[in-house]
Every structure is written in C-alpha cells, then in structure tokens.
Image (spheres, one colour):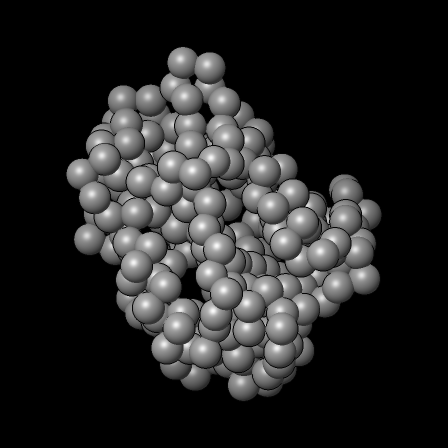
Length: 235
C-alpha cells in the first residue's frame, strides 16, 4: 500500500469492503449513489467549466461510480481509495465500460505529497463523515488542486433533522442504506466544513443541498442544506 500514516477507520473500511461486490448493482445498498450521481456529476461539470480535457481526482472513489462518470465526460481521471475490494470492483468494471480511470490504493495525504497542485478538479464525496480526521483530508484535497482549481466535498449536516432523515429514515425506516452506515457524531455542519476549508487555503465557497422526496422517490439539488449538501471551493 502506498501510504505510511493512514487517516482511516478500519471498521469503516471493512464495512464498505463487505459490500464492494454490490457496488455496481443499481438496486443494491448503493442505489442512492447511482441515483444521485447524475445530479452531482452535472454540478461538478458545470462549476468546473466542463470536465472534458480536465485532470481530476476522485478521493474515496469506492467502486468508481463517480470516477467513471467523470471519465465518460472526457476527464483524465484518477480514483483513490483504501479498500482493496472496492478498487478491484472498480477496475473490473472498466473492462465492461471501456472507460479509462487510473485507480490507486493510496491515502489522499500521500497523493498530495506526490502530486501537489496537479489537478483541475478534486472531488471528495460522502467520505468526510467516515474518517477520523476530516480536516486532514480537506487540507490534502486543497494541496492536490491547481491554483484556481475546484475542490468539491459532499457530506451530511449535523442537526436533529439530519439524524432523523439520514439515520432513522434512510437506514431504519426507508432502508435506503444498511444500518450502521453513518455515525451522527461524525456529521459536519457547513460552518465547520467551511472553517476547515478556509484554514486549508480554500475560498469562494459555494453550497447546494441534496434532498430526497420519499413519496416521489426523487433526489434533487436545491437550496435546502439541512441534511445532505455539497460544498465547492476554489484553490
């Protein structure tokens, strides 16, 4: 493995590794990722000024749903993760899709030392709430971006509504996600994420909410950031 200090929770890695073989099944535990992917892809593409020809890195890429989608838009894409099983699934899926993605098992901190200021766009989606030190991840993502490049984070707000929707609703009532997927204490308020990002030298913050209507079963990007949200910054 290409790292020396691991900012990762072994239990979190194992949790997603156990599900890795189901990553590309659109009706599996990863169904929400498949359904939100077009929304976040379009948002990233738009703010980045078009992904075609851009150099991008997907931090915590898992089985490669977003990585492949960015590659399909013409981006020169790298995907990094610490789960052997998820990366194996991601690489196997390339054989089916024919897309080109450079998948690597390396921490974001180590990649930042190896390739500082190398990427036009950096994405870190649904990862900050699963690591012991999110500030370290944010600093590394900032270091990876070229001056003026875009850095995207998506995570979950920390408030009673987020607990109700993201844990009780999604994991226990609607069963959109496996029980135990999220830990409330690790959720991040936008103000906390913005503070860490500013400390890392990122600026020009943009925020948009990601909502789910349980009646229509439709996801949307809108102004409501009380549960899921995406924050974008300029390096």
